Image (tube, rainbow, N blue to C red):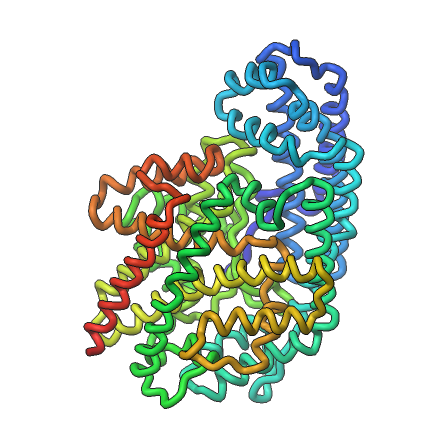
Amino acid sequence: MPTWNLDDLYKKEDSGKLIAELKKQTREFTKLRSALKPTLSVEEFMNIIKQKEKLSELTSRLGAYAELWFTENTADSERTSYLSKISEICTDAGNETMFFSLWFKDLNDNDANKFIDNSGKYRYMLERIRANKPYTLKEKEEQIVNLKDLTGCEALTNLYDTITNRFVFEFEGKKLSQEKINQYKQSTDRNKRKASYDLVLGKYGEEQPVLGELYKNIVNDWKNENLKLRKFKTPIAVRNHGNDVPDKAIEALLNVVRKNVELFKEYFKIKKKLLNLKEMDRYDLYVPYKEPDIEYPYEESKKIVLETYKQFSQDAYEKAKKIFDDKHVHSELTPSKRSGAFCYTVLKDLPPYIMLNHVNKLNDLFTMMHEFGHGIHGMAASEQTQFTFHSALPMAETASIFGEMLLAQRLLKEADKNEKIAVLIKLLDGQYASIIRQAYFVLFEIEAHEKIANGATIEDLNKLYLDNLNEQFDGVLPIAEIFKYEWSYIPHIHHTPFYCYAYVFGNLLVLALYKMYEQKGPEFVSKYMKILSYGGSESPAKILKEVGIDITSDAFWQDGFDIIKEELEELKKLTS
């Protein structure tokens, strides 16, 4: 299994030099404070922006190494200490230089527009600074918030990771990590599935007195900063503003999901019949159609991923290949390594880093395809600025999920009838997990934030989550009591409140985009790559308007479910 080459960021022994350089650049930037006047020439203003961009690149490089090194072994005290140290240094640099954004926010519209209209690729970044004006505090207050976060919400989420990543489970006489025991959730053996869920959720239940209090304090921190101090109207409005999507678009998205939950209830009835199960409950949610008789070792998966991207786009293939060639992938399975998978795009001119935990299952192949979609997206936006090459969260899942669709359709074309059924089930299982499940996480969060603000107990949250599950599965899949602990197991609601609607947005968007690809063929590819090339240099609404998509329309989101309905009809035909 490969490990990544972090030397492309910097060598650990050189960290002192980079820290000294960051402090030097920060001091030089602070000297510009007295020069900030509305009478600045556009050229002088742009030179300041480019100095700030260099600072951003340096803090990104320093922070990424610390985070990735910590990921390899979250139980190592040296790595934990280094991550805390770098976080504090980068926060200090941000505090010392935030005066620029605060000054720019306070300009009158005429003076600000003089700079914005002549800023080229930096335009959207400057517009977003101005958009934050109603929610911005005074400089000293902003500095206090940043310092508070180091020992507040950041410390709480790091503590959550430290606790949960050290969980070890006794299973069939072996000690397994969470990553390894989770694969049994898809076992064809009911007893193994149930044991996997019970062990993991039971452990989270045992630790819930601590984990629950961590979550409640994360939520209260979110409320105190964003609603009390910054005056956002609702907790989710904070995320919507950060993503530059209208509240109306996310309301439409969640409403349409709720209206279509019956579609997946119908799917689970079909799946129950296919699997010849007398009874089916929540433990059986991800049971495969048949035990896969093919394993997908790392090198074979790599080959399939590259071939699939090449069939779609030579450009996408070359970008994915460069990530492999530059040794920016870590898939070695080691104790206390962070679970799951991610893609970390650090700099616009540096191939992203991809973390995997590959155990040779079909799901691992899809995960690889997914994360390399993220990588391709980041590299496609390399012509943007360091400030604008990262896409907004709702668009961030577009390339990753589109990659999964490409892979699924390839496997469907190459499969016999039984394999097609298995792939359709994999596809529909994935669409449940990334649309319905993720939307209901957000619906849980909306209510949880409200209830915690009114003094909810951990048991109140458990009941709320069970009610959430019952709405998804009522009349189809009975829910065991132990699933009330599942919300404590979801990292995103701790790390990044309301993040999960990005998966819903991305999946339903991709279904629409894939339909366009089927209809238009090769001419669509250039349009798709152009969408990726925007990165975060425009709002999601404006980027998608180019291909005729209105994200505030219920009808658009319903189009995605109509395509899922077609998949369900195909499954019915194959199994009739």
